[in-house]
Length: 180
Image 1 (cartoon, rainbow, N blue to C red):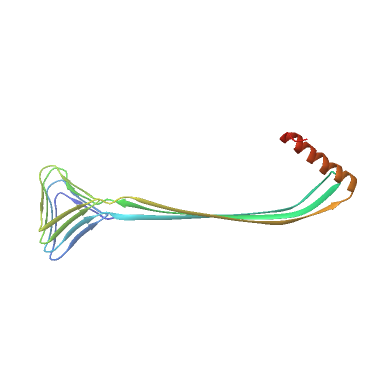
Image 2: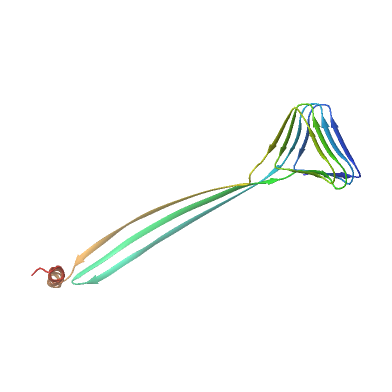
């Protein structure tokens, strides 16, 4: 924003007068006047950030036991994206350290997310006066996706061992559940 300062400040406009994200300051009197509208408002400082991560994995698998051998291949990928957008209000400041502050508008006076003050009197004159609050905002978005695929091939190389392993497993399950 801009900055205007002096012993005294007198700003006059025939139509509209706007102070946006700026400072108007004087030791003595400060006067802002417009035939139509006076607007003292914050400026907006906007920032954005985005991140993206992609991971890929692949490999072979293998096992053997109980008369069965297997070999396989698996692959997976995952993507994640994140974005953040923030808006910060940068207030205007209008005032006098030791004098009076007079703001007059022929129609609308709007003071939005800004500071006004004086060491002595503050006078606001207009048909309509609006004091408006504005908030800082932060918006975040994220998304994730994943895919996986693969295959496995098993070969029985010892049918007897495979049968015994399956039978022992079934017998163990029956004993575990209380059946005989």
